[in-house]
Length: 497
Image (spheres, rainbow, N blue to C red):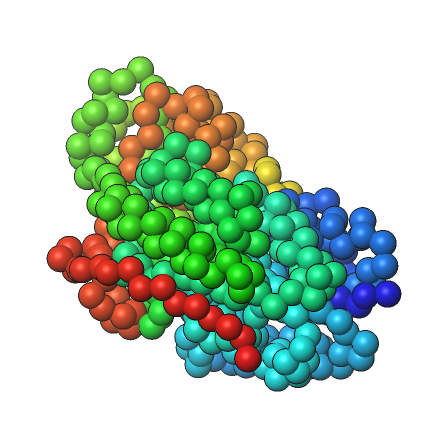
C-alpha cells in the first residue's frame, strides 16, 4: 500500500480590511471528517475522488481548515491554527509515502506574511527530503520562494469565476500519483511578472487571460509540462512577493522547452496587462444610464466583495442610489450585526430606526440612518449554489424602506451567488436593481438575466481601482501601481534539494 497524507489550509485575505480574522472563522475538519467533502466541487473533493478510485492507496486524512475571505489573520489565531495543523501532521507520519496539501495561496497573518510557506517549510522538515509533496492552489495564489523550495509540484485553478475546483484537486492527485509511480524528480519553472490585474478580461471563458491559460494547458497536453498555469495573485493581499507568474511543473529533460513556453506566455501576458484592468463607473453615472434601460440591472460593488476579503458593510451604493433619486425596486446585501440584532429583537412586522453600514469600516462607510420594516428573520445559514459548501451569515434580517429591500447579515459571508438571498425568501429577479458584492459571479447567477451589470467605482477593501488601495509591502515597481513599470522575462528554474 502507498500511504498518502492529506491536509488542507485555505483562506484568502484583504490586507485593507480593518478587521482582522481569527481562529474562530475557520471550519476545522479532523481525520475522517474531511470525507464530508466527497463529491463536492472543492480541491479536496476532487483529490479524494482520484485517490479513492486508485488501487493500493491508503489515505491518512489529517487536518482541514477553511475560512471565508476576510481581513488579515490575527497573530494569536495563526499561532493556534498553524500549531494545531503541524502537530496533527507530526503525529501521523509513520509509513507516509507522499503528501497532498490543499491550499489557497493568498493567506496572510499579522505574524507571518507567508503562512503557506511556513506550513510547507515545517512539513518538509518533518517528512524529510525524499517524500514527494504536491499542492493545489487558487489562481489568485501568491506562490512564494519558500513554498517552491519545499514542494515537488503543484496544480492551480484554470477558471475564473472558479468552476474547476474539484478538477484542480484531481489534477494534483494524478500528478502526485505519477511522481510516486515513476519516481519522478520534477522541476518548477516560472517567470514572475510585476503586474496586478482585475476586470472583465480576467474572466477565463471570454477574456484574454483565459486565452493565455489555454496556452498553459497546451503545455500539459503536448508533454512540455506535467502541470502549468498562470497565477495572478490576489491584489488585496499586500505581501512582499505579490504579483503574477507563469508556473510549470516539468521533467528535468523538458526544462528548455518549458522555459521557452513560459517566457512566451509571460510576454503575451505583459503585452495585454492594460486590458486586464477593471472598467469602472461612478454611482451617479450608473444611475443615469440605468434610467434609460428596461432592466433589470445589477450594480456590482467589487470594492466590498466579501468573497475577496472585504468587510461587507459598505453602504456607499445604497447612499448613492438614494442621493441620485433612483425609484426602481432595489435589493442589496450588507453586513451589519447591530442592525440585524435590532430587527431580531423587534420581530417581523416591526418598524425600527437603525443605521446601516459602517460598523466595521466606518472611515470609508459613514453609517446610513433608515426607518425600516422588518420583513423576514432567518439564522443566515445556506449552502453555496455551486460548491454546496455551507455558509453562515449569522442572524439575518430583511429590512424594507421606501423602494429598498436590504438583506442584513450579522457577519461576512460569501456573496458570489444567490444562496443567501434565497435562504431569506428573496428572488433577485423580482427587483429592478440588484447590488452584488462580488466582482465576477458565474454567468447564470445574475448576468444571464440582467440587461446590464454596472461595475461601480466606490471605495472599499477590495476595490478594483488598484492604485487607490495603498499597498505598502509588495515589491515595487508594480503595474498598475506604477504605470511605467518595465518587464524583462527572466526564467527561474527551481530544483528541490
